[in-house]
Length: 468
Image 1 (cartoon, one colour):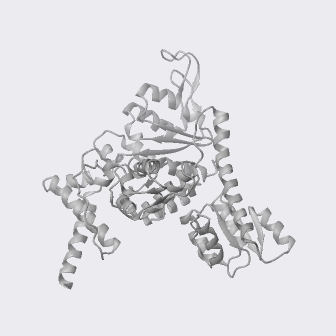
Image 2: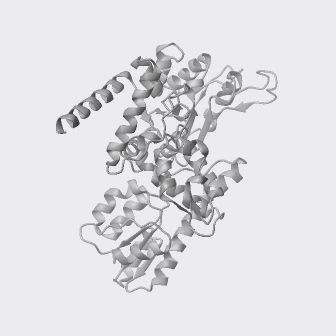
Image 3: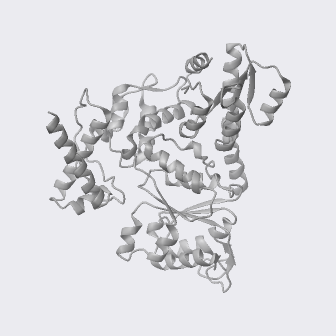
């Protein structure tokens, strides 16, 4: 039955992941983040109803179709009450299952879009659809660590600092932390601290009284008050001016805000999430960021890996973007990608991370012929892999050019990635004239990590030499 349903799904253009064990499926449900779950009801160990309940608890919004040979009315009622989107009796017709699948996916798509439309109508803004945890793409070990941490801390009130390069998905994680918490029914308010000058940012965050400054023609509540009961997300907090850092520290300590030009304080009940694309610890040591504020913000740090540190996820992300642009209506049939183009994407360093990959795929999908993305459709810098900007955490400095290597046929993926990393590190050290501390800073890693990588590589080369 598993093979039959998987074949039907594959024929319909879907990507089925098959298990014959309910227990195993439960263990991997979150990491796969499926768009639809189809389960038999009667299974050894874990029943389909248990799979359904687990899905509703951990993957809200993901439809579940139950398949069973039982015609008991009580079982059907229990399944519907538990949230099953459909209930199919065996033996079933192929068209019946196909219709149930398409109906479930279509309903889920409409349900996901509804909160966005409602929020936009109520607030008069183009706020994006709330991001659920399962909307974040990734199965690599680094991303699983992030997912596990988010699961543990989402439903707490702890202040969290999200670290990572631009384009790694810091805001997605912030939204996941909010929408998986008890505050999900209250506002999620995000602001980029680098987008406004100091005086305007203070007014936006804390509000102001009428007449507090030129142009303050009426009282205005700040974003902290707007987020009452919910979450405020302070993106790029590394750019915040020292005076504002002091005022933010007072808010975190006292849980009160004072509007600009006001004499009184307003109590707030808001969870604070912050993000930085620069290493705050380094800025703190130079005095550019307050030490006491850093420790207030970094109660629980969540570090987002760069895309080059989770290359295993690139094929998954590519597939996701192909499906996204297929659904956008530009192409009638499912988009595909040729092997050489995918290999090129996997070999590129992606200094702009997932955001850059998404832009590259949008371009490729628009330019491709006959619904197949080829190497010629990719951006020139990806194909050439030349003059790539810095990708190290807190970057800004140029990184050395790494020429596109000939793929070593016969080598394992780990060997290939390790070789690329070794050459990249060696070239960075050479560019910094042998000063490893500067090389580590350019690479966005600590000096200790750099020495550890070099030592591990030296031991590996010595072992290889001994073996030969």
